[in-house]
Length: 278
Image 1 (cartoon, rainbow, N blue to C red):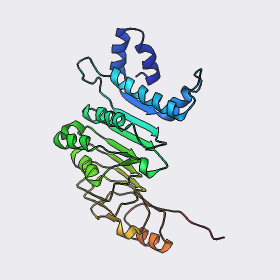
Image 2: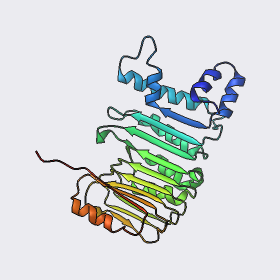
Image 3: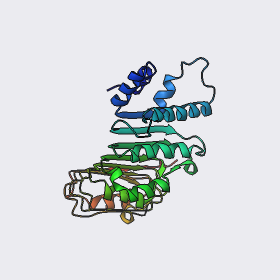
């Protein structure tokens, strides 16, 4: 398998090499940090973060265009699609990122999807597009091979996450990190899921998990009273490791939440932010 850098280098040599690239690339890892370190040696260097951001977006768009055949079909099988990008200002490239998501999901072959759009401002979060959700609702077969889904700083509604879980029979790993649209998440009859992480989704009021016979690892980090947010039913009988974390919660509440799972799991971990007195 060729790396993206190797593939990009060989693809300019000839049409034959371009076809070889298309048949060799199965993992797309668009890590902005790695890319910016790689272009730091350019002369002249990019003088602003905005130039870097535009270069990165154009680069991703260019790679995805080259992976499309002349008839518009996508080749080859893409087993992993990962984007890691820092949004320093209000997202004005949503159209580009929507197309990246559509490429990954509507290709019908993606097994692992990771989107991390880091930002320090909650108003700058990337919003999971309704058009894409409408598509996968009517064509669930497009996501049936998905085994791993990780969304960081992506505002996604509970209904969307629940749809993925219900329609991805192979989904084993699910991570939702810093979503400000996730209010209620009820995951029932999740037959394949083994690892679940819900981290700092501030508006979350209910996280209910049940009928998950293969779930072994659950990591939950909330902000308020944990007894009102997390419900793990007894039919999650293979749960081995449970990690609970809280930002704004008294020790008494946190330990009360933890005590509800004593005897049900092998490893219990509690993470809390403490503020020392002056």
